Amino acid sequence: MDTHSSSEEPRSMETNSEIEDSSSSRTRTSESDDPMATYQSSGDEVATQEVHIVYMMWMASQLSSPRVLIPEHNIGLRGNQYIEAVLNGNPRTCRTMFRMEVPAFRYVCDLLRQSLIMDPTERVTVEESLGMFCFLVGHAQGQRIIGDRFQHSSETINRHVKTVMRALHQLGRTVIRPTNIDGVHPYITGNPHNYPWFEKCLGAMDGTMIDAAAPARLSNAYRNHRGRIAQNVSCLYDFDMKFTYVYTGWEGTAHDARVFLDALSRSSNKFPWPPQGHYYLVDSAFPCIEKFMPPYPRERYHRSDHYSGRQFRGYKDYFNYRHSSLRNIIERTFALLKNRFQILNAMPRYRPTRQGMLVTACCTLHNLIKTITPNDDFIQAALALQLSEENRDADDELGETSEVVDMSHESAGVMAAQRDGIAIPMWQDRFGE
Image (tube, rainbow, N blue to C red; front, top):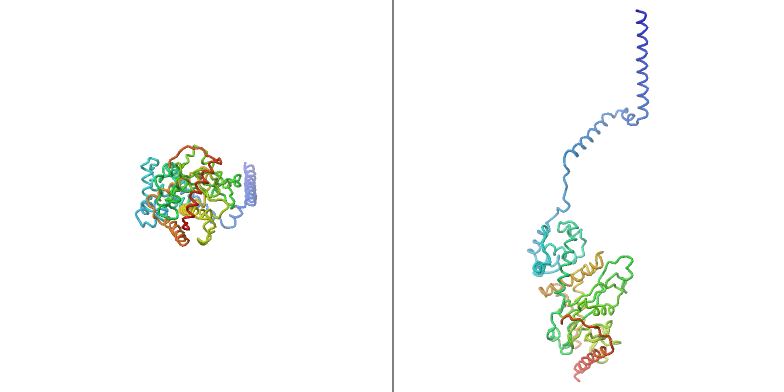
């Protein structure tokens, strides 16, 4: 029994040693294969454990506590607060930021509100919506910059700018129209160089190039003779420097005569034809037909071509000079419009239809401003140019109807005879003959 028991103990001891040897060999093998184990074996086990503990604590804090969202627009005054501060503050601020006087701004807001074209939303008033639109068209700023100024998202800015644009476009149907068709305009009667020769003139018509944003496949069609991507806008003006008709949608390569004929030939355009015997002044790019008086062809026309009253070569040359002097109100009106609304010189990448509506909306706003505040700073600058030109002259000495465009020789003859009936007596009166 003792012999048997003694023989069992060595075998048991041998087995335990073998187990320890095998486990130690596996440990050495795993430590040699695992780089982290090698790294830990270098004495940095405590540091590694601390890193893991800090990381787990941070993850636990992130999962347990809700994240605090920081609002994007939290700088400065809110939109309605900013509008109230501008309208009740220094008048110069409204003139600078919104490109109009405070009375004109309030009048346009009341008009949009009373005509039921626009209603305030839960978060944005009509004043704030108009302020966004004026800021956009007056300074040609991006919608993100406007959103930062009014503390609204870009989606809110875009939606309200579009609403105001459509409202002004719709309002333009009643605002952009002839208003002085009875009697002679005071601008004519107040200048002896114009009265009584142009007493039947109701205004002037011309086209202008306004910057456009066209897709690449249509860029050649919109590139005008100056290499600009533009649209050709045809407009009528009266002598109050107001728009009486605006026709948009034509590419920059379109000729003024083509746009003119298209505007007259479509009854849906509702062109304001002048009454019988009256006419509009046009330049040499337009055809000579009844109710539209161009200058004499192949004669000097622009005012800069004349240096003194002694250089006129006949009644045609003198008539062209007076025709240009009276018609240059178009240039002043275009300059006033583009100076007030800078977006017309840097059109955003809107759809072509939206670009045309934006031009009409700016013309509508121009007419409203001219009606309420006819002597604001922008208009005074244009009038200063007008007065300086009149001083140089002193030194030198309707309703909408559906009509058919008459391009016949008879129509051209009628207008040529009417033009001669003005030019010859005016030339004789100029020299006292």
